[in-house]
Length: 108
Length: 117
Image 1 (cartoon, helix red, strand yellow):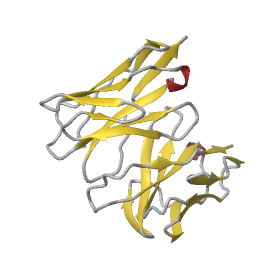
Image 2 (image 1 turned 60 degrees about the vertical axis):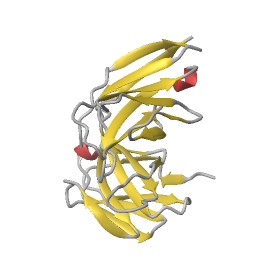
Image 3 (image 1 turned 180 degrees about the vertical axis):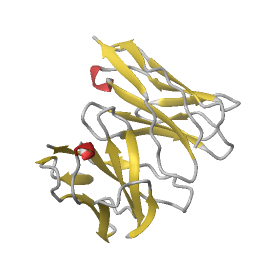
């Protein structure tokens, strides 16, 4: 799997957009970008995934650069319940391999 | 209804004992997994079963033996428990559209915290 690089931690004010970056400069053409999050002591939760195009669902938006070497997960209106570790994963043909992720703290 | 359920949620036991963790999914998925999250919070895949057949077996000691009686269940049995086995074990399931693309979203259980004394 291609490796990903994420900042270890970020803060975001409640109600503001949280923009979580991920670098995956060695991504292969058939590898997808996945985002999961893990709220304290719970099992990881799927957020969104994409290949080339930007994606949006009820939880978040995923912006993938044209060269696919980086992406950004956007939580449009962060709440305190969005405080979690967010994992960016790129993969094809193998199950999820989790890195260290970004610990997002949403502050009131 | 819980989609992926694990039992027990907490397990405290002595070194050398044998223990099992059970996992059941009611999503109709064909693939199930066991992940281990250690004290440093790294999540590592251990096993994956597709339609009751083992398809992934990472470098895990032989003391760990998964059993899949049907595609809705994947149990994890651990023999001769060691201190280093203390961790949170997560079960997950997904629907694999085609192998080996594995593009299906994973649904995780709430975890089973194992403490070996």
